[in-house]
Image 1 (spheres, rainbow, N blue to C red):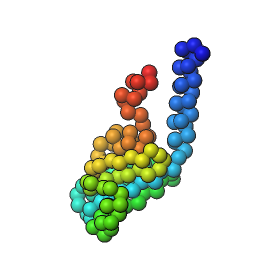
Image 2: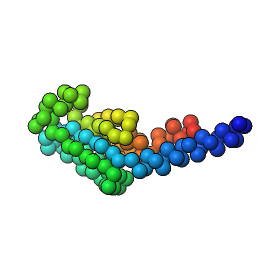
Image 3: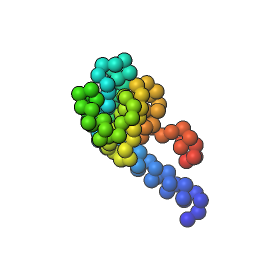
Image 4: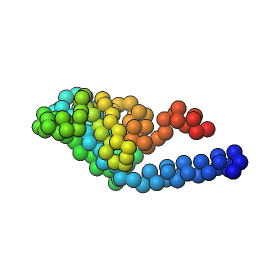
Length: 121
């Protein structure tokens, strides 16, 4: 294979992965601490992102660590709020109020990181 054929094959595989990932269902768990400002912001932000980018393809489980502290220990949560993307793999953890939309979209593999895009070009 020459370089042009390799580039075409790589591009084709990349586009197939993107197409398939857009059909995947997401399982998300948001760990919050009651009704703190940061927890409520994180919940509002992730709901908005899910409704805009994952409509009908996501399950969002909200876990209040005040009500269920054992789940925090089991999930190895060190900061609140924390969003865990369980599915599709790979597992991803995002910490904070999720207000940096681009970082959340990258963390959920809904868009490519700009540096990754440049690496592929």
